[in-house]
Amino acid sequence: MQQNQQQAYDRGITIFSPDGRLYQVEYAREAVKRGSASIGVRTDGGVALLADRRIRSSLMEPSSVEKLHKADDHIGIASAGHVADARQLIDFARRQAQVNRLRYEEPIGVEALTKEITDNIQQYTQVGGARPFGVALIVGGVENGDPRLYETDPSGVPTEWKSVAIGNEREAILEHLEENYRADADLDGAIDLALSALASAKEEALDAEGVLLSTIDADEGYRKRSDEEIASALSELDLDTDEEEEE
Amino acid sequence: MTNDFDLDPTDTPNRIHQQCSGDAYAPELGVPPAGRGGHGGDRPNASEASENGELKTGTTTVGITTADGVVLATDMRASAGNLVASKQAEKILEVHPRAALTISGAVSAAQSLVRSLKAEVRLYEARRDEEMSMQALSTLTGNLLRSGAFFIVAPILGGVDSEGGHIYNIGPGGSVMEEEYFATGSGSPFALGVLEGAYDEEMSVEEARDAAARAVNSAIERDTASGNGMLLSVVTAEGVETEQYEHPTEAL
Image 1 (cartoon, rainbow over the protein chains, first blue to last red):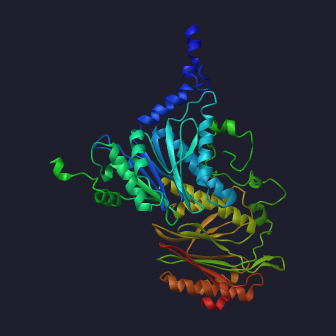
Image 2: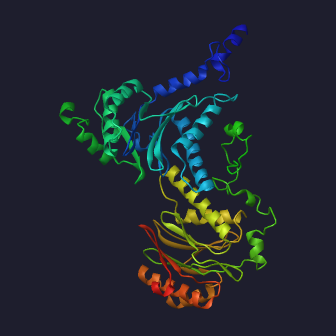
């Protein structure tokens, strides 16, 4: 019993450890690191969201792996970590986006939507009987014509980025992004940087089926890119599977 | 149902337990506060108003289906008794990438209804990655009116989906009747007179456009509550195209 009391901070999310940490929230961050990577790149031309898609079996339908989500016409969200937790937050975001249009007949801002999401996440670090979300999100979109990019983490902190990665190999991808980022690139430049950053962290070559790509810009809003578009971007960058090598 | 319209400071701590909605008929995003319960306040709800003959609709709106799309047309006068309250009332409003609503009845209710529909349509599309069918959109519109939140409107819903063009006469109490052609508002008897003669199952979009313009023009000539120009929308698989005519004869 005595021992249980001493270790309560390890299990209860609302209990601080003696050095002021919330262990369950930190464990939730570990869950994010185990998820396959997602990348967001913001340039003057718009935002590119890229997700690594793990296909565990040839019997699985690849299209059922959802890692990029349309939140509204002008905002997309990428996730890393627990997929089921992500779905709850995505649906929350979609509802909030439409509530904003109902209330004000204006599209919600990227910053405002991100903070609605993180305020919701924060509740799950402070209310008893709940568990934190084991997921991080990248929220990208266009606000008053300007591209914006945010990250949410399991503690409920919103952070704005020029370019960011979440999930597996985050550090390696961030390093590539830091070295190669250019703010004045167009939307194709954002796509190229995201693809090359993911490729830099992976040992095997990329193929169109193994990644998901969406873009958001002022003209077209959120647009999911087709496998053909991804394949042609990969081959232009020489990142695609080299057939001869495989044989 | 979550109270999305309430700015209640005590709302946040309970967010965690607000995920499930119990009411199958409730729209995902709720309804405006004044309409909750349907009989609140001193305003009559839709079914009461229509039974008492209080539903005065100083307007003319028309819808026609064809094989390739639908045509919607309205006048542009908003009336308040004998006063012309607006000479540039937009009575065709897009609610879906391939559907629009003509409005007759109370402008306040119609505008609020359109806002709700647009938000629900976007949410449906974001969640499912496919557009709402006209079956779904007309049912949703009927359910919203049936809730009593949006009183005194008699819209025509016109849209195109994978099955082709559809026109629905949506009653103020929430009835949904699919039609080949229809007219609502105080000028509708004059408009229907024209449509009875002009409508043909085989007609092209261009012919339907002409018939709709003549129907609204008749009502503008003979109904004192209709006038001030015309709006004409053609809805096809490509989307909604709306044109405005200061003088209704220009549309012919």
